[in-house]
Image (tube, rainbow, N blue to C red; front, side, top):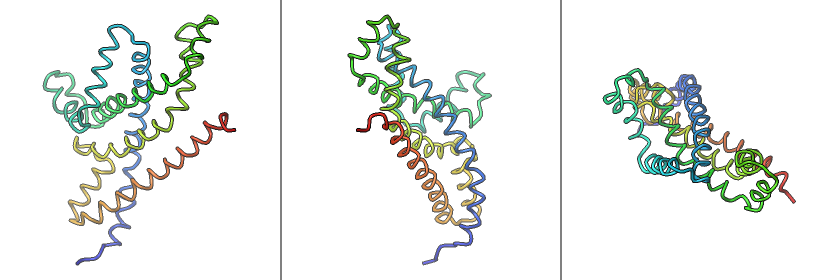
Length: 224
């Protein structure tokens, strides 16, 4: 049995780390857009807006019910065959779109559950003093729902970072794509994938630490 080539792994580490910023860029951009879209979808679901609510239900059902990889292929390979103007979309853009829509569907349900969990007496009190529905959502409901949903949303962000590894299937040379190329060139697949696994692990553990600190901060006002 051949031992690990530690020298190769040490030399590979800075090469792979140079692609980490692109991986984080994909995840951060996708998370920001997904969070915005998820809030809109959740509000439509909570308020049961006519016409829009069934469409939102269909959107959530589709993107939760199909694999992310299928969705990425659909945006990058499928839709450009139907709509010619989409041929201008590159792998990075298709990845961001896929991550945004996929995770927005999941996050919308988490945010909706957090909103519904707010004590009804608070919404009734807000309306009784003359607040509009928009003011009530912005000033009373959403700030409290954000505290409840924040840990779950951070988990989705962690999952999104790991999901960026699918971008290499669209020709994007991010962290996983770079690992695949390096492994194919050296034939040291085990060492290459162990190295990238450790990088993902360290990033996720760092975010998990941030999540724990965030939960403590958000719950200070509720500590007894």
